[in-house]
Image (cartoon, rainbow, N blue to C red; front, top):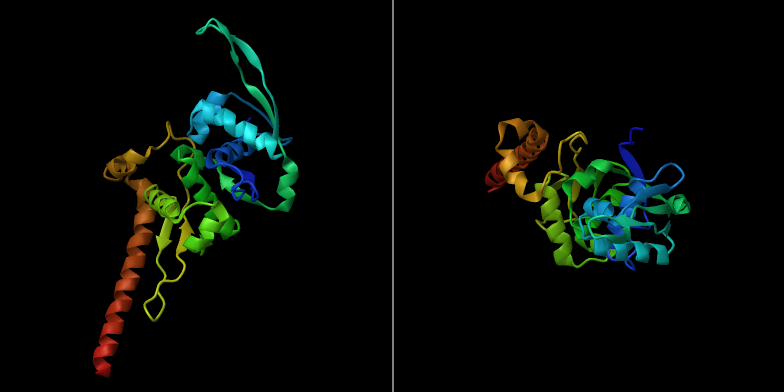
Length: 246
């Protein structure tokens, strides 16, 4: 059966600061890969790979999610030939679909390809929630801090990473008195899920110079250059008007 391109992520999950960043990321993973009835089977190793954490962290995250009522699960064990003993198999999970009634956001499954750290992933979801399933959002750094429970430095580091991965186009908003307002975030369409392997952070700069990968970055670069051109034209017009006044 073909997986849907988007999944419903309850707004309460990424913004619940009682949970660790890893627990929230693992929770989103379970919502992403559960069926229409909210059931899925994943091993701790599979959850760790999707949420970009260790299997032990994934296990602890599952316990947190169950404690706060986001999921319920049944542990399954099996004989593992490598260790000549009993080990964990694929656990059976059931996500709490009632949380979707209080509001949810559509999130692309392609976001798992970027293998973001848990904090950056949660910041990305916070921007999607602020966009309201649209393509543009205007949350301030302080609002993103409040939504995610992260420090300001963590939010800024996550935004820099998301810009490098072309998940976001961040436009600085400047008032007439030259003070900064809340940034404008354009949510850029992500690459197809048919890619052979995840795109790593250290590959972005190298891939941008590769001819075969230029088409992936062309739209984003075109938009950025257009915005820069507009701002440069506005600056020239303002300079000429000031000269005319004097």
